[in-house]
Image 1 (cartoon, rainbow, N blue to C red):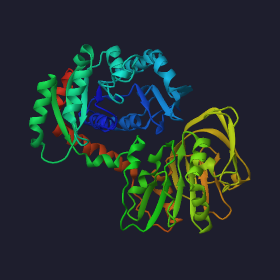
Image 2 (image 1 turned 180 degrees about the vertical axis):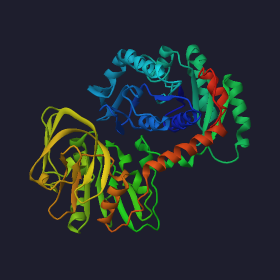
Image 3 (image 1 turned 60 degrees about the vertical axis):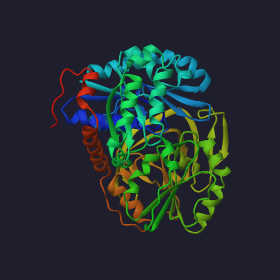
Image 4 (image 1 turned 90 degrees about the horizontal axis):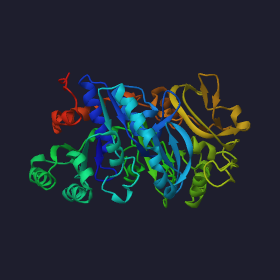
Amino acid sequence: MLQGCGSDVGKSVLTAGLCRLFANRGLSVRPFKPQNMSNNAAVTTGGGEIGRAQALQALACRVPPSVHMNPVLLKPQSDTGAQLVVRGRMAGTWQAAGYQDRKAGLLPTVVESFQTLAAEADLVLVEGAGSPAETNLRANDIANMGFAHAADVPVVLVGDIDRGHVIASLVGAHTVLDAADRDRIQGFLINKFRGDPALFDAGRAEIAARTGWADLGMAPWLAAAARLPAEDAVVLERPRRGEGRRVSIVVPMLSRIANFDDFDPLRGEPEIDLRFIPPGQALPGDADLVILPGTKATLADLGFLRAQGWDIDLAGHVRRGGRVLGVCGGYQMLGRRIADPEGVEGAPGAAEGLGLLDVETVLTADKVLRPASGELAGGGAFQGYEMHVGRTTGPGLERPFLILHRGDRDGAVSADGRIAGAYVHGLFAAASARRTILAQIGVASQEIDHGAVVDAALDEIAAELENAFDIGALARIARLPQLPPVE
């Protein structure tokens, strides 16, 4: 089990890289995360949902994603409340304070899912959440040491040198953990080192001396990780410049933005400048396309959008002839009205939509979770997934955006063709669908296979970890009877 000295230390990427590394050695490998908190989720083949990171790790293992890989998923809907998903299905909305007291009841489910995966694999690589050194959360824990003890899993602790104070982070964790938790940690890894690794030899020796934990290696800054889908919205707060790119696509950063990795394939298009616009900034007046992304709380984020003045910016964009695309919750916002009579996403209520599509939506408790494939009404095949609550009706549906293979139609397009929306995620991943959408804003797509880009990045990361880490020692800690050679 990889645990970390904090959030965003790179546990997800290292787990994915190690999944691919051991899979490349011919082992049957499965990823596992007992509890995840993210609004970036993926749909499994059986119609459940798990964290995006575990779906990526399943891809690294070259196996289909399963609800057992992330049995508990928390999807934040407010600063204090989250939708609880257990083995891929909604299990209510819990407030943070109440969840801390009740989560121990989920431990048997978590352990059972782990055992299910362990029974079918040579190796299960487990990812922790946050840090075990957050001792105020230790009681009733199911994400880190609470799970590790219950399932008898050895732990390796990850420190992030890029953010600094890595010696203090690792030694401090050793200091604050109780004896049983400390003893479960078998070694440490350093992540995100830039430069000559020999420059930190003395630092690694000091950590080992102060903790007694084995030094298992130090990973360099993994540039290939930028080509992987991100799960944590913190990455959106790091602006990327698109100098020299001639077409601007902007995405407002809603407070509960979800599944924003939908737009990763656009970063590989050399003519596209993709920008996520943070709260407090206006939507640029020179944007060619504004995309309203998915959200975990549509009504709340519609209010958030208006509080930023983005509705005014969007109206001006449309008056100037700009194009707008809404995905999932963003599609719902583009309609005339959204109602949540049952309080599915918060307090019951309703609000006028942006009025750019002639549809309206009623949020309902039955959640749609399923793969989706078909063609854009304007041509171009896609393969994605649906993950939403709510039913959308109205005259606008007579001009659908998508024609699904199962015979349904999805989404709507305005009479002038400049405004469109649909529930399906993953449209930009398919080269042919991306070509059609980008042609509408005057861009000739490079038609890069985004899936191949991600797969190649996983192999590149695995190769770097092979050289950076003591793989033999990791295999012994994982109790592997033997480690196959590199193929």
